[in-house]
Image 1 (tube, rainbow, N blue to C red):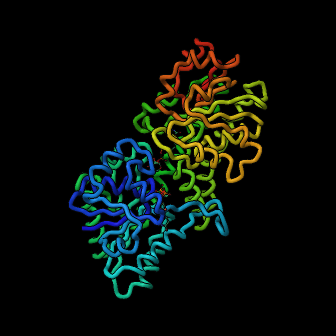
Image 2 (tube, rainbow, N blue to C red; image 1 turned 45 degrees about the horizontal axis):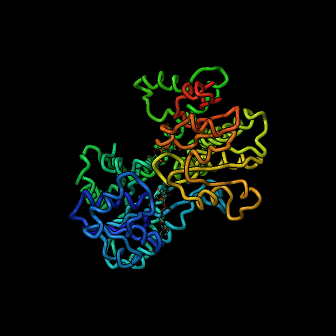
Image 3 (cartoon, rainbow, N blue to C red; image 1 turned 120 degrees about the vertical axis):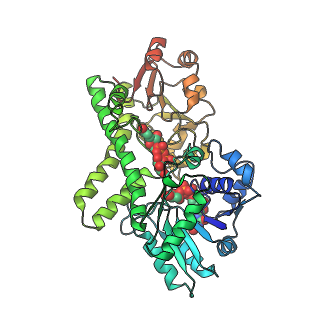
Amino acid sequence: MKICCIGAGYVGGPTMAVIAQKAPDVRVTVVDMNQARIDAWNSDTLPIYEPGLDEVVKESRGRNLFFSTAVADEINAADIIFVAVNTPTKTYGVGAGRAADLRFIESVARTIADVATSGKIIVEKSTIPVKTAETIKKILAANSRGLSFQVLSNPEFLAEGTAVVDLHNPDRVLIGGEKTPEGQAAVEALSSVYAHWVPRERIITTNLWSSELSKLVANAFLAQRISSINSISALCEATEADVDEVARAIGHDSRIGPKFLKASVGFGGSCFQKDILNLVYLCESFGLPEVAEYWQNVVKMNDWQKTRFATRIVKTLFNTVAGKRIAIWGFAFKKDTNDTRETAAISVCRDLLAEMAEVVVYDPKVPEDQIRRDVLGAEEGEAGKRLIVVNSAEEAAQGAHAVAVLTEWDEFKTIDFAAVLAGMPKPAFLFDGRNLLDLDALRELGFTAFGVGKA
Ligand code: UDX
Ligand code: UDX
């Protein structure tokens, strides 16, 4: 069997690397129109950082795992084609700011129809609005030249930073297909790939639309838990309750469960906000404004949490940060990834720069040019002079009036805080946006320390 995956990003790359590792009898090729990205996948420095990924790629690359820009040839050779191209939020026209931009999906469908000389199974991996499979099917049917195409939905549930572990041991694999004999045969063909390492009872099959919708709903529920606990964090700060204690207490209820109850500076990442906005847009399109508004509030609460964090810094620093140096520890949207899409750090840095602070950022994995582009955009302007990126947490804190922890990188836990404190003007403030550090210990050292949802 031959598999081709279009899109060598955070989803396509790791997913295909694990399929190739676990199914050595399957030939897997990942294609991308971005030559630099493909070159990186073929080099010793992969384009994305994921713990354990280097080893997985090294094991299979050149054996049954290949990275290439020969899109047409590889599509033509494949039996199963995964589509893992990006589906950003539309920035123009109807639905701008909310609906998914499906132009890459459509162009991929047209390319497949153009170049295929035999029937194919097309698998949607990208998160897309419900009924996108229908669009792909229509484009393929109108250009099929008598070939038979089956479209499946197989959403990816891996989380960044734990992609390899999640792929090796998924809670479930979801495959949606048509209830026709051809559709069911396609579902079985894809199931047999995963069955190389995933127990059959964890492979869930549904109709196409249920599968597409389940991906949006899973992310909406996860994000909702974070917004719920973050809303409570504001109440905790006002009442001297401790949000971690509240989370632990409610998480012991087996009906609630302990996961995704960590209060934070706000969720980021490429999926949560985008998928909720998609869901909201869908509900509006189907005449369900109450449902749309319900989910919109999850995003609203998250935006508020990010602003609230920056505002708390300004207020605490005697209502002015103008000319003050603020250290930002961590810029990625979570630890163990170099991904910065929708990271809360962008919002916090912008708010502090708008207050005329000097913002000094350190992140172990995110390069300086990425941080500058995310915060400042194409034009650096005056604020560009006040945004500084450095190579260590200690360097960022040197001379800073406050340190803000925005990503829960492990290395921040083992820092020599006494030395950091010595290099800061007093009072020295620390704002832990991840509730990562021992606030009591920091206070004993002499910091004025705050967490999220803590007095
Ligand atoms: C993307 C989407 O963001 C997500 O919603 C979906 O679930 C999976 O695909 P990700 O892998 O993180 O996730 O995206 P990204 O890292 O941007 O990778 C997409 C790749 O597709 C890029 O390398 C891009 O060059 C490539 N691409 C895009 C093509 O090869 N052809 C196209 O027509 C469009
Ligand atoms: C998410 C889903 O978990 C995954 O199943 C889906 O395939 C893609 O979207 P990802 O965005 O990679 O994965 O990371 P995730 O671990 O879900 O974290 C998302 C954001 O929520 C991060 O910014 C994280 O810091 C934040 N978060 C998570 C919290 O603030 N509190 C929590 O308790 C959990």
